[in-house]
Length: 254
Image (cartoon, rainbow, N blue to C red; front, side, top):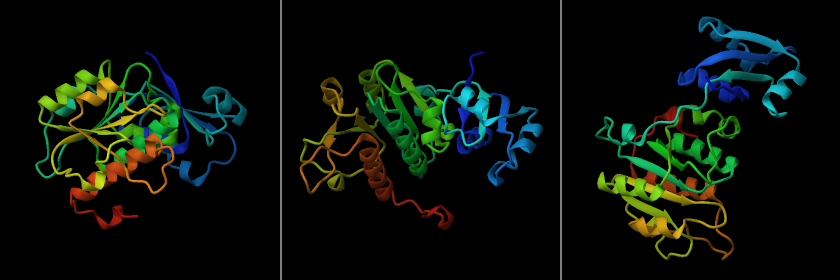
């Protein structure tokens, strides 16, 4: 079985909580265990996961980064989900479907930030393309603060065909395009929908853009380059979230 090395407290801890990956070994730095890590050895022992204490230099070698925070884990690769499983799965009547489609977002930091916001607003699935896209690597899990471990990510070969499938399921597809006059605050996001976010610099490809039902933009005061992919995604996701009129538990508010 293929494996990879997760690193950082949140990715490792959230992966343990999510239970979607197989854990083979847990690595902790030999120096004093920080308070956030104190429960991890006990959790690993309960899960029958081997725990190894390593020098920080050894952790750096395993994780290939200085950002390991003194913790790492050998785990199975990120578990993609199939589109049909989440499109056709059981739906809550009081929660609408919301999918995020990323058209050639290649920066892992953007992908991680997008996934972190997607978890916060309850996106059903984040759809990426197999080629010319950032993939859900350990670095993405780190940037997402472990949110990746809880989010459904679908990897497709053809995003145009995927849009057609979603439209056949009754979803409206909105494409983010800085050149359109239709802004997100004048849109009705009340139904099941998919939002397409374009790649860094080039935006949504023309073939993908043609499949969108409506092109929308985020208003800006200054006519400079548009917001980057992760910020644009966050703004539109939270406008959709605002319009959904969900009752937010007090403990979930910032």
